[in-house]
Image (cartoon, rainbow, N blue to C red; front, side):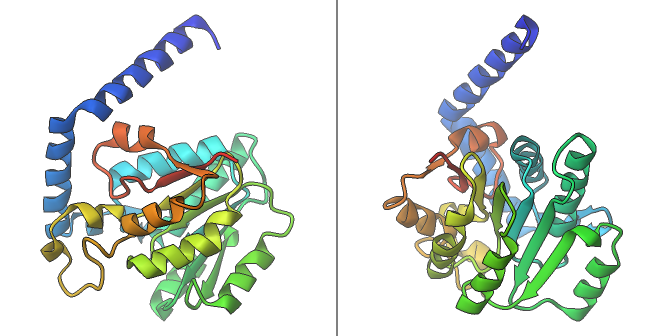
Length: 250
């Protein structure tokens, strides 16, 4: 690493650390995120033609993680319209073009894969890198199928974005976090449910006190092989996954 790159990286780290201490900016960011959810902002975007129900700023972090880890398998709980699967597959294609694993795949799990969504995903040019399993992500028989997919895979990345209740997310963490490779990430989305008023999620079973973030904190009490990578949320500021970017360190 030359001196110019070292200086750039040092300046970036200093900025991120400063943002982590900027409570006022963080509060403004949380207020913006809350209002954006009230207006269904995350439903406005697509990735290579498929709706991707993610905050665009988190997509940038996901891209950085996939590039850094260079996984040969990405496990995703929650499929919806399939935009996140297509995003992951496209990033794996780019990694391959840049010297990453040529056989990298995405495995998506959802309790209800709607026929029109399955048809559109399977018709997509990137579908050859995607496998889908229908069923509850925490059902024993589904977990067995996922573990079968791990054979001959060395670097595993996990994205969790299905049912956001405490019990479900905790069960997903118990099942899938241990599959995460050392140095890779288990990302738990929508932890911000804990930080906004309950009425943001009307007619949903999750709310403050019963959220992905409470599940993350419960899981980490007995799993010091993971740490919260605060640098990611500090640099993003606007993120649906505060305390949700879990890095496996041992």
